[in-house]
Image 1 (cartoon, rainbow, N blue to C red):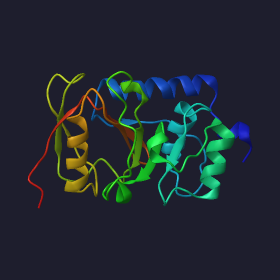
Image 2 (image 1 turned 135 degrees about the horizontal axis):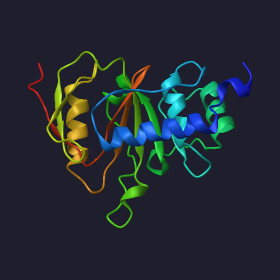
Image 3 (image 1 turned 120 degrees about the vertical axis):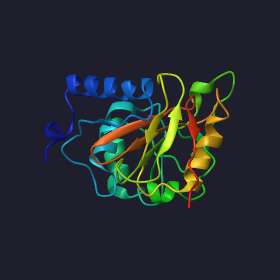
Image 4 (image 1 turned 60 degrees about the vertical axis):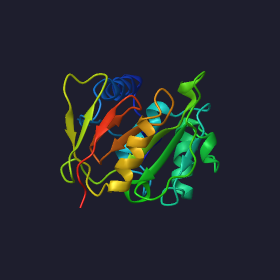
Length: 197
């Protein structure tokens, strides 16, 4: 496949960027995401689309064990110019699978009260938005709470997100990505958790 087939046109990238911004302005509502035509194994095309849109030479990227492969590293470096870092607390973006997100997280950059925008944005590849115990999300951008389902997300994951969001205005922003859809959980969101079995 040629680079021309893989890379998005400026119009496509602008559309993707607007889509991502829209997800943050209306949290926890999955929307369909246009994807590039190919991505290396382990990195979903939808995650690659986000990377092509947001990563650049000024945004170090941390990859989880599953995603830290030579093809994924090469893809990110070649197409975005972003450096891959092993230091999670230096990452502007982090990418992991849902299985890994259910476990303990490394120490990411939470930002500071002076520079909250310097925190890490965590991208989590999820199986789907059609299964799982519904979590009710409220906050800026939502007139009323929204029920969000994320397949295989554990109680520990949701409690970690809730604890993170309680740190607002510092804290992590989270992007949940299925193979075809994206939903954002900005740090300003508030979560009401169900009674997990």
